[in-house]
Length: 212
Length: 212
DNA sequence: CAGCCGATCATATCATCGTATGATGTCGCT
DNA sequence: AGCGACATCATACGATGATATGATCGGCTG
Image (tube, rainbow over all chains, first blue to last red; front, side):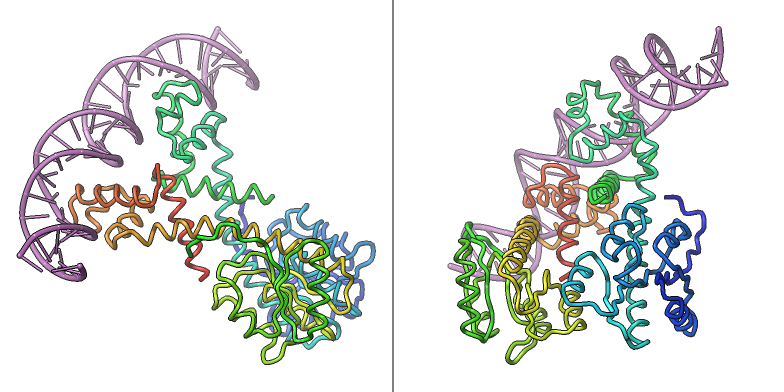
């Protein structure tokens, strides 16, 4: 959640059990000054991948022990949101469709042209950059929200829903004065300088907790 | 934009130049009580499809005169947001990937099992229903927004941005009284019963006009 | 031209909001 | 026992917002 290391350099994470292929890809990326990291297996990747990785993933849809589709589920569990580029040696169309529907940003049949892979990575990087920007904003808001007391959260919810202080007081069986205090504390802790700003923060929290 | 005819029944729109295939698909859908409409060409579809169609589209990626990919672009121009299910007789993987990236919800290689098509349509219907619900809400808001005078829109923008009446007055070189009048008119015309509600409407407008 | 709409401003009243000051009570942890 | 966080409520004052009444002005339209 926190972001101590500011400069997350974008990295292509390559997962494949074929060592020559891994090295070939790594060299391809290095030749255009893109940092690459290689992993021989999914386990290897999950144990070594940094928390706040930026960049994208490149892997074969057919991996030892797990297929590329279930893997995309695993990623979510580990909080990894890297865009995925799937490769396939002898993939058929149904497999391609499942891969794309599972969220892959691209799907390259082997053999592919180097330029196609580079294009795919460029797009994946761009997407990841956007997603990170959005996620970082939301994370900052959620972090602040975590510092609110239970009462303050209740009041914030009702206030951003459009209830007046007086109505909130009725809803929670409180005096209006108490509501004002909680409301003020929520504004201060969230860093909101206006009610509309607080409303947008509430929205950001809803959006980033519902899909989770 | 308007929605006079409430009961838009979901319809599968089938576009294919092969008449036997059209009829076979039509019969398949009718056998499970799904309404189907057939079109021999893209032009035929674009001239006959109703404004507010609900349901989904089924078409071959290779059509006479236009390919299925450019067609997805055409749909946007005509304001059609129906989910697209692509079929392909001899499609390869790159074509599949392009189709999926262009927004197709599914891609069926011919020949396909009837059940696969029905599943795809069921998913497409479900997606369309969700999209329509969201779009209808946004459309209602946009319709109301259209009734605002230019000044009222300016004031609404600044107010939902968190500016106080006094500040808005300064921004627009107006008296605070005038701002209050425009603000009140905006609330009334938009049907917002609270400032947070107005803020969410403003967000809905932003979201539905930026991607356009 | 008469009427309507948009835009402007004033005065006035009332409700609501924001915040400070001060006080009481519970709980948990040291 | 004491400290701190949380929660509660009161009084009070000033700022802000909502609304009504009334008025002026320009432009468009029947």
